[in-house]
Image (tube, rainbow, N blue to C red; front, side, top):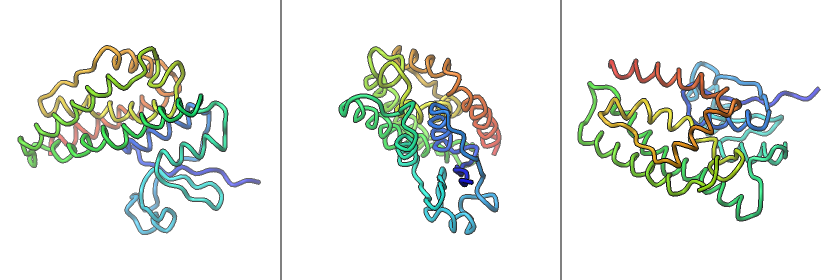
Length: 221
């Protein structure tokens, strides 16, 4: 009997949500496990996943971390439906959009987590951080496929997996800092398509609730 694939995750990890969306789009149901001892920082977890990060996939004797590496591995192991369809050029664009999320949009938003609690908020740093996030959201409008409805064309791909959880955080976090996220018409239409996709929404409904609870608790600190 084959050992089940195990996906280590945490409820508030946007990258865990990204990978769960990827699995949902592919119809995969790995066994979900929280890190042992209640934390991805625990020594018990590092004995399983040396990088000490989530998400992480255990597939037999292979341990793999980093969400895009895991998603691409799963896409090769289970080719249909593909998260990286099309020509070499089309696949490169999908990868680019996914990297844009990981390297350009998510990091400045994550940097704002330190500004959520009013007791430790630095107004100048919060304003600069909001500016940085808003610039990336504006840039996203120019990068999405002009026809859509998904980020890279007519169907969901890896390019659509990371943005829903990150933008859910932006929707809740920026207003706490006095900003209202502004999305262009193409981005709004794309987000509507993502929200209407039951596979994506199967992950996002719970994730939005976790984010709301976390922000509510942090904003009282």
